[in-house]
Length: 274
Image (cartoon, rainbow, N blue to C red; front, top):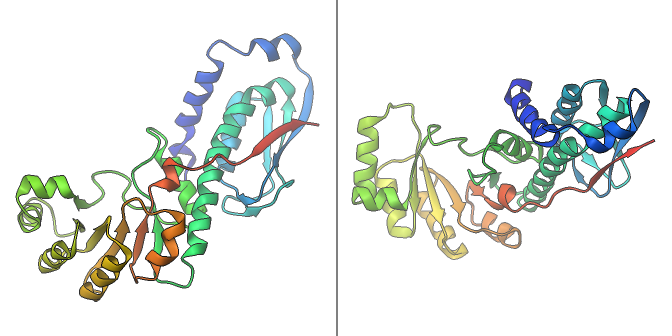
């Protein structure tokens, strides 16, 4: 992830927090120098270190030194980074930096857990577009840090024909025909299938990916058997962590999980002045 992808996000976050200054910090500190440590309070996967570094870069007079790399496993009590410089700058950047790191580390940790559960199968864990508005680039980055993969970033990345498209077009076949007429040959086409009949119709249309939406594990296994590698299969629709191993055992290629980015738990990190 390049700095230019998140520099403006950091600026806006700092503006939100410091629009009227910091009455507490500015009343107590001026040019005093200090050092702080960012400590992990639990085991997991760290993410967001470069974003935190940019936070302290923008508040000025504070130097961020990371002791790990995004995607590394960390333990409770680990010092993941130190910050040196003006105490006032450290305190002004503290909450914004922690907000980014805690959220991204939470996503990365949750993703890593899902990836571990499907290890040994062909299934790959992928995310969705169910992200926080404005923060998609960061949240999808955190999924990668946790060992997952990214589905489409936006509506222009690929064609995904879902239930409402199918209903409006009249059928899967009609929707695919219209897409092929109006897009180039380089565009991948994914079709949502609600049942085995939809799977058969999508196969007949020679699409690239078939989404097995809200199917039972038994139905997914039948669908994978019917597809026989002629398209990628994606399991989707409210799949929980407790179901992951059973879903992966059906032989699906992809498992898309909205909860990675919409129901994560913030990772427990704290900043302490030394």
